[in-house]
Length: 193
Image 1 (cartoon, rainbow, N blue to C red):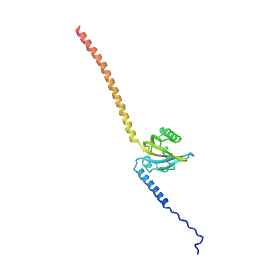
Image 2 (image 1 turned 90 degrees about the vertical axis):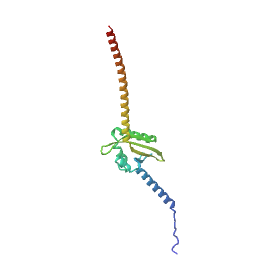
Image 3 (image 1 turned 180 degrees about the vertical axis):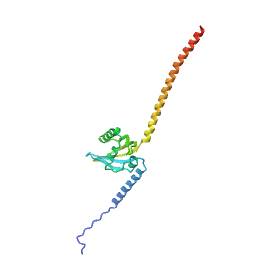
Image 4 (image 1 turned 60 degrees about the vertical axis):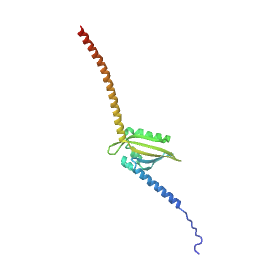
């Protein structure tokens, strides 16, 4: 009898395997959704200890911003491309949002490696966890929207200028009408003599 003294333990890991499969499927779904959205999706964390970084950045970051989605140095690479005229406001907006644990929304100019400027908008909502805050957000290219907005503003300025010019022309016509009226009266008065 050599089987004496042997203990055998069996664990049912069916539930664990189902959970792992559910997680794998949700991750796959998120990646497929992210591939079809013209935006960069991300999860940015800020721990109570001050440590921060990215848990997730969608592959579209390379297509939109020209930056690979490596979480280890993404923040540094992204911020190095923010136009100098927007950089201070960019950091201040992040600090405000992190300090107050509020949603973050920022519009600015990103300069690609090629030198091409790109208007971008980043938005994120915080989720407060035990020892950290995780921001779930998107970064989108709003260059075309900004171009249309600038054209609209220009058209509005031209409309205002046309209204102003029309008003001036009308006022000038009224003045000329008075002058010509007096000239006509003077002619009539002088021909009557």
